[in-house]
Image (cartoon, rainbow over all chains, first blue to last red):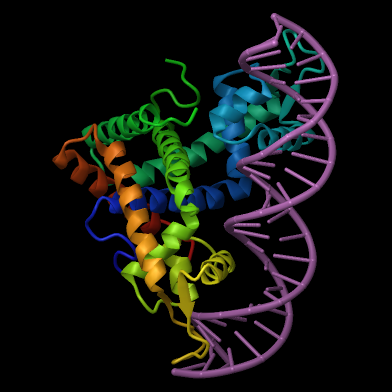
Length: 151
Length: 151
DNA sequence: CAGATGTCAGAAATACTGATATGG
DNA sequence: CCCATATCAGTAGTTCTGACATCT
């Protein structure tokens, strides 16, 4: 057991990030399973709740997945009657998507479940520590993006 | 106030974790590409550097991937002459793996490249803030693991 | 023409499940 | 018998790379 890979060098943080992401993903999978919902599906519904009328490409960017993956997620959600898509494009080619009433209800339940998971995750931290953590992650992400030649 | 997904609720942290992980992964891909090495391959070599004679199953756990995925990674690395595996098992069925001299050399170069990436990522944080970040991530991960009925 | 979008197709890497076999 | 390991086979979801068409 112990520190598997990193010891006390800089690489410990990349390892810690990977570890918490994998752990959180697994716990969320278990938490959402009773609702017959996958994590990508939850993220899609959550993004739609925040941004009604979003297009497939917008949702894909918000969820950090490709347009193809989001397209398959949307198709599944549409078949389950949780979202509805316009058949014609108001502007350009973008087809706006919305939550159906049933999708809205399921999203509320899912948010409660996921909120409980995140509360457990953050339980060791004080309120100020939670703020610090969020600010640190955002600052590190910005530093990575700005110094990257990628895109 | 209305950003991509999270605003100011708890879900912002799950979103921030996902965002930094995706960003870091992309930057590491670009950084390792000149060495013709993928991130999973790097993680495998790194783990082998820390734990010589590790078995496939041990490496899989350290890298948070399945044994099948690690098995294919090991096969590729073996074909490139970067690692060598025993053909007989000293104990049980575990086949110990080691870095070859060439694998050792490439790992040193990769660690330098990845170390530079992590330094850029952490550049906005002070030394004490870096320590706080690592401790916070570990504490949150432990809280998730301990309150999880999963395994 | 450039840019964003939607869609389709194929290849690749990864994960999951199940089955089989071996050794402690 | 139980458990961990290694391996193989099949299936699935995701990503990537192109390609093409449509609309601003």
